[in-house]
Length: 81
Image (cartoon, rainbow, N blue to C red; front, side, top):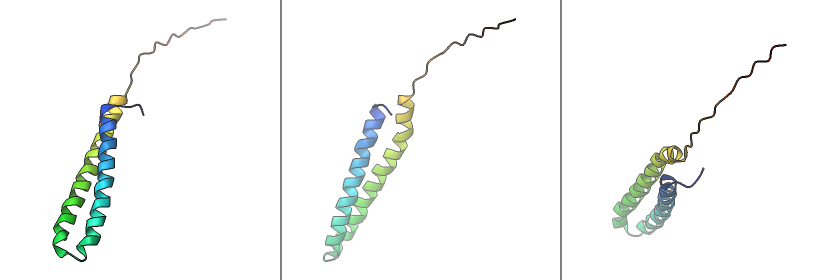
């Protein structure tokens, strides 16, 4: 696939989702000793999920932006012997 605006935005969202998941796991580990952090874990994981869903939605847009259409004329030649 070629570089498109939607494709590049999708890549940013995928990286953001990965970062948020890692951050969520770290906060989840910290929440074992501080139960008040559990709400933060849920919020971070929800943001990661939203970023991932947005990235998946952009996949089709990126494909459409990358679509190239051209017209080809076909000539039929009949040979009679």
